[in-house]
Length: 336
Ligand SMILES: *Cc1c(COP(=O)(O)O)cnc(C)c1O
Image 1 (spheres, rainbow, N blue to C red):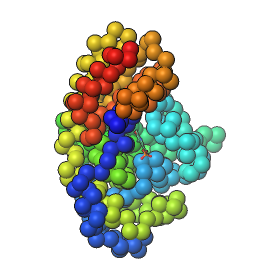
Image 2 (tube, rainbow, N blue to C red):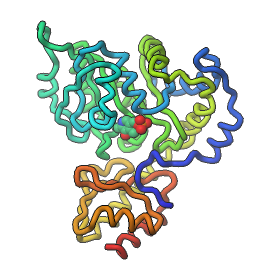
Image 3 (cartoon, rainbow, N blue to C red):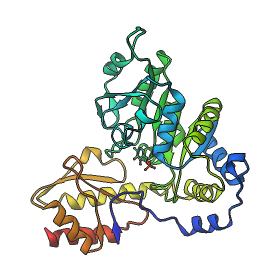
Image 4 (cartoon, protein in one colour):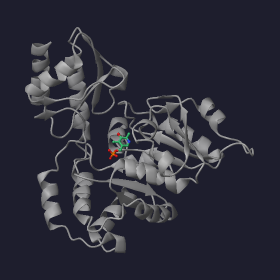
């Protein structure tokens, strides 16, 4: 099967499978897992932060950061179309007990004056603004300039408010901007990124921040049921992900651009070109029955998702080749 649904569907590489097989492990709740320790040290150094923590998923990492930064009843400012807002099952109300205040976002960018107005002043009636969250790369396929992250970060610091970055695809963003990931990590107090998406590790995300922040987060991780035992098997794959899979992310981006150029040739397809920064192609398509199209594609060995907000999304990844893309385009031509 050719799977264009997401980059979460990637299979671990041979090198990862071998590394998992031979990983030296221990009980990480007792701080006894050398491979987890190695991964956490490696990540902290890579992003030039003090400390890092392995967590089971990106959602877990984001919600853990919200809980660690805030107290119950705080207000957290997030983009209206952010993952934390729309794709985490309302967890912030359940776990951190905070209220989310949505700010209109375009590709992760906020209007800075609007953001300024959203920061609460001291008043007995008001919740405290406990955190501002950014998302980069954004789930809509776009990457914001570093300068914009800096503006948000500087404003937050003026008001002594912490900043969290949902960097599930941090390394895709860094590749798109042609900078090192640590350049993006500069403008946030905490961040989460996924080892399990385009980087191909089977499971896991990392939370990164100051030593004190990670110490507190570690206790909450236990509270949330994320204290893992011989997790070094997963860390072994994570280390390979960071050592071997980062530099090739730009191949996924190039392939997405190639696929977009082919989709553009269809008269019933409109590719959304201003969000073509990473490994995702968003497009609108008229004249097809959605259910039928998905099922016809499946019969031709191509897995795709249905539309969200009227848009289709095809995602490239390590397991998708140029031949797969050509076959997909040929199949679509025949079907349409
Ligand atoms: C995938 C993703 C997450 C969380 O990922 P899971 O590991 O699936 O929980 C968070 N934020 C963004 C923007 C994502 O794309």
